[in-house]
Amino acid sequence: QVHLVESGGGLVQAGGSLRLSCAASGSISRLIVMGWYRQAPGKQRELVAVRTSGGITTYGDSVKGRFTCSRDNAKNTVYLQMNSLKPEDTAVYYCKVHNLNIRVSEYWGQGTQVTVSS
Image 1: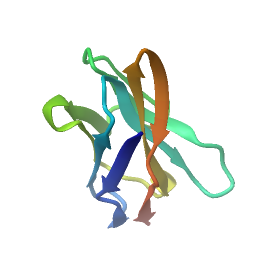
Image 2 (image 1 turned 90 degrees about the vertical axis):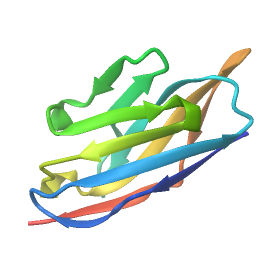
Image 3 (image 1 turned 180 degrees about the vertical axis):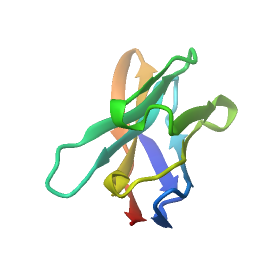
Image 4 (image 1 turned 30 degrees about the vertical axis):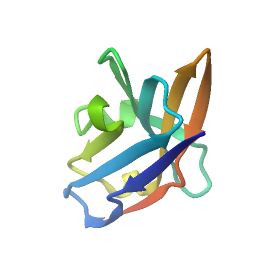
């Protein structure tokens, strides 16, 4: 099992910034993908950003140019720097990792609330 602990969510005004962190622990073999998804009330969960162990990052269209996803492989931690936040960024943000150990297993964090006020 891989355990994920997220931190950094909260309330911020539009135009502000927040930084989310997600630390993985447990039976880690190789975290080939680490990243973030979000789910707003009444909407489907959507991709925010994911980063591979090789350094390739994919962003959702709505956050390109504003959010930056990075990793510290030595700490098994993924970060999400969110700038120029908008009210429509309000959602529960979930960390997700893919751990490769013979096969790929996916793990989700418990989620952290981000609220952007107008």
